[in-house]
Image 1 (cartoon, helix red, strand yellow):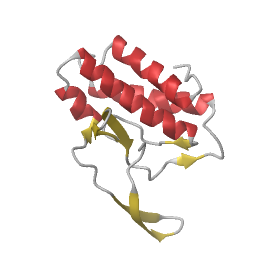
Image 2 (cartoon, one colour):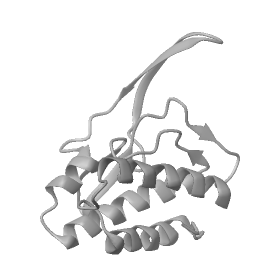
Image 3 (cartoon, rainbow, N blue to C red):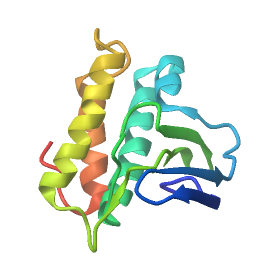
Image 4 (cartoon, helix red, strand yellow):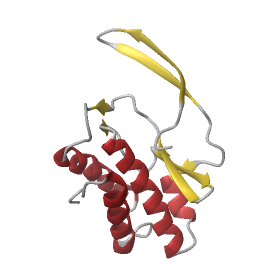
Length: 148
């Protein structure tokens, strides 16, 4: 599951609108930021990087560009094979006819990198090994190298 399941939606207005989504609860979910803060080892951080990369790559392969991709809009939760991730907050997302092109992927991933730099300016939550794990998992899951 790369995104939280939407159960209901409501939109009021047209040009200027307000919307609301009702989503399914994911038991045991926490933000990627909180999970990184709680990770007790380098292996745990790399597992989080892999699960986040897999979710993001899955959405990109489906043609979804998340307008607010950041560490608090990626939820991680227990799954049979370890940690899994799901994205939330799609109010300004864009959907393409096919997989996102490389430039769109890179823009979206740069947004995620800026979020990490802002929330972890000292690099204590994720280092170069974690970034390499993210890139490798993203490339493997998305079927197209991100070039990031």
